Length: 85
Image 1: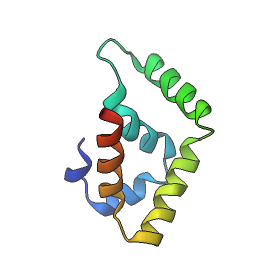
Image 2: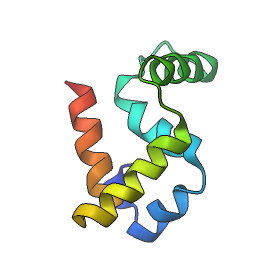
Image 3: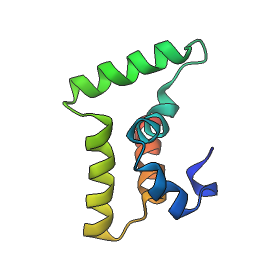
């Protein structure tokens, strides 16, 4: 589902499920041939290379929202747009 269609409270609730946040962020990078196992492996390897975990991603979204006031939904839109390039 597009983050623009999600309410901010729904997105904030998603922060309690960091794996779902990671999936939302990486979704633009998934290929059509990837099954769930491939997607999980792709996310795992990418996050390991960046020294990240799903929880760190979720924590960073919260910290950035508190620092800048930028909504979780808008942060996800920006992140996904950057990854899709």
